[in-house]
Structure formats: structure tokens, C-alpha cells
Amino acid sequence: MAQDKRSILVTGGAGYIGSHAVLALKDAGYNPVVIDNLVTGFRWAVPDDVPFYEGNVVDGALIAQIVKHENIVAAMHFAGSVVVPESVENPLKYYQNNTANSREFIEHLIHNNVRHLIFSSTAATYGIPEQMPVAEDCPQIPINPYGMSKLMTEYMLRDISAAHDFNFCALRYFNVAGADPQGRSGQSTAGATHLIKVAVEAALGRRDSIGIFGTDFDTKDGSGVRDYIHVSDLAQAHLLALQALMNNPQNSYTLNCGYGHGFSVIEVLDAVDRVTNAKLNRVIQGRRAGDPDALVADNRAIMAQFNWTPQYNDLDIIVTHALQWERILSQKNMA
Ligand code: UDP
Image (tube, rainbow, N blue to C red):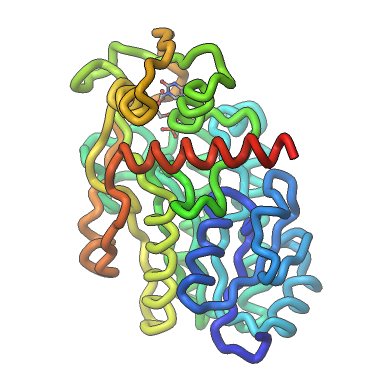
């Protein structure tokens, strides 16, 4: 395996999105190699035949060893911290994990001649956009340290790619949801806060109710609108990005990853009710701090540049897969 030219280092490959990227890479015939410190990831989320290194992306000796031993040609950098309210409480953690550690990791890649990187950025870099759907060239004014910590890494990548023989693709994720259709992975973090995860937990009786955080937004029904994208479609976008980077070493890309249409909180909960044929216990609550009314991707750039063709652009399918994973997860937790 180590002789194969297509070994890809996946940081955070034991986490939610990273583990789906590993599956997509494997399914497409690449050799993913995972580095994960298992702070939030799960060892079982990485298939047994995928090389796994427990460690930190700032460990230069380890990165050098992996690159050499596994013959790494490109990296996907998922490792990082992702909880917005936590970033407000503890900005130092976010600037450490998402900004400073990314800088060191990129330096290790450059030193070891790994010339391509796909970076997990976020719609949170836009803050509260003036224009909807939001396009890549809209002003980026993050309203929390999470968004800022990712934006700073985007800036670093731009400058580093101009100075070195190195190109990157920053994918700005919108609301990632759902799970592997074959039930091999899914969102597994305990105490998750994301709407679809919380809603399927409530649907399976793990929570008494689901809160609707605000019904006075400037949206179709007053609840917040987001662009929910299936995690497996997002993983496919990473594969296309990888091919683009390797085929066009002079080009770098910064692209939104969303379907280009939004659903309100109430529409999402209606979808859960439809899929389960039951009724969630909904509790209307106040707004959560810092929530924009709507966040929907202008996705024309990724469609045009990568010919990305989502397979699961259907809210009921996203909910069905999230629910299927939640059932599998409870069996794992009981085992
Ligand atoms: N939301 C909600 N109840 C919940 C969790 C989220 O009403 O228990 C709303 C939230 O206010 C936002 C949308 O659902 O309008 C998506 O929130 P989520 O935390 O999933 O992602 P975010 O858009 O904040 O990254």
C-alpha cells in the first residue's frame, strides 16, 4: 500500500466529517491514512484496513514519519474544534486548534513535500451576510471566534500557496447533516447541539423535547433557515477537490459547499415527523445568541468548477440516514 501513489493523509479522520471522507476515499480506490488524537473522534469510526496514527497534527516527527512511510501525496485537514458557543467561552482553544495548529501542520506538509491540502472551512466565516444566497466573494465578517479561527487559516493558505509549490482547496461547509447511507459512520458526539442530530435523538426518545430557537426571524415561517447538506455529498466534494488540486497544481480554490436552498427549523422538524410517522414534542424557545436569520449557499462556483453532482439533495433522505445512524449508535453504545 505504501508504494501506491494515491495515499492521502486525513487529519481528524475518526471524526464525523473526516470519517465519511475516509469512506469516500476508500470507495474511490485511494488509500486514506488517518491521524487523529481521539479527543472527539472514535477509533471505531476508522475502518480496520485504514492505517491509523493516534497523535497530533503539530507533531513534526510523526508527520514526517507518516508521509515517508505511507507515501502521502495530499492531505485533508478536518482536525479542529467546531462548537460555536464554546469558541466564545474559550477563544484561546479555537485559535490554538484551528489556527495555530493548522499553521504548524501546513509547515510540516511543506517541509515534507506534500503539495496539496483540502481544508475544512465554514459558512461561519461570513458572519451575518448581507446577501442571500451567500457567494464566495461576499464580505467575511465572522461573529464568533470559531468563524474567525477558520478565516485566519484561509488567509494563511492563500499566502502560503503564493509563496510555495503548494495548492489548496478551502471548502466552506454549510450545515452538514445525515450519515453514511450504508450505516458505516455518522454523527456520534455525545451532547451534540446540531438541529438534525438533536431532533433524531428526540424522535428516538433520548430527549423529552426539541427546542425551536426563535420564531421571530425574518424568514418564511419565522424560524431560522439553513442549507443542510448530506455528509456523503460533502465527502464527494472533497474527492473532486483532491482531483482538481492534483490535476491543476497552479490553481487553488475556495468554494461554498451547500445545496443552494434552505429549510426552516420548522420544516426540518416536519421532515422528522414525516420520516418517523410520529410527532416531536416541540418547545418554542428564545433565540440563541448570534444566530443569523438565514444562511444559504450560492453553490454555482463548486457546481461549475468541479461538476459536483449531489446524490442526497433531499431533506427526508438526510433525516432518514441520520435516524438510521442514531439507531446503530445506540446499539454500539449498549455493546
Ligand atoms: N436550532 C433549534 N433547536 C436546536 C438546535 C438548533 O432551533 O435544538 C436552530 C438554530 O437556531 C439554527 C438552526 O436550528 O436556526 C441550525 O442550528 P445548528 O446548531 O444545527 O447549526 P448552525 O447553523 O448554528 O451552525
